[in-house]
Image (cartoon, rainbow, N blue to C red):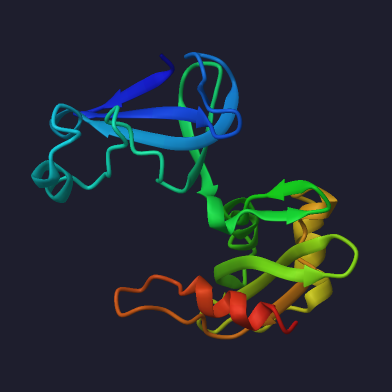
Length: 186
């Protein structure tokens, strides 16, 4: 089985359609499934389900993690993005995390959040909400887009840039659901 063990937890790379588990040490991408040893042995018990952070599906595997992961040829697993944050533009999948990582490398940008925005040609395209570093002057949109074009494939470059404070929870997590609502009108 193509699984990796981390402590008492196993992480497995699954393809959803058609359902299958990839063999180990094969370059692939799919959804993350997890299983903890203390949860898998009591997969049918209601008390064990409440006590575990996963929801076993009969065989002890949780198929509802919502994380898109990839596995490298050496067996290393990399979290690509949350499944709901993947932007599908003209049939191409764009990881919002990848675009955010490039944007935060810009000298004036402190934080970035990238979400899907409607696009009349491609269905969706990336839109970026950017928070500047304290004391930094707002860069020109063309400067930021040129910075992205030098580091990303052309279809991954954000089509819209919005500068300002990012909405966050009390713990500091960016509230992407609010940004998705704003992006729908861009």
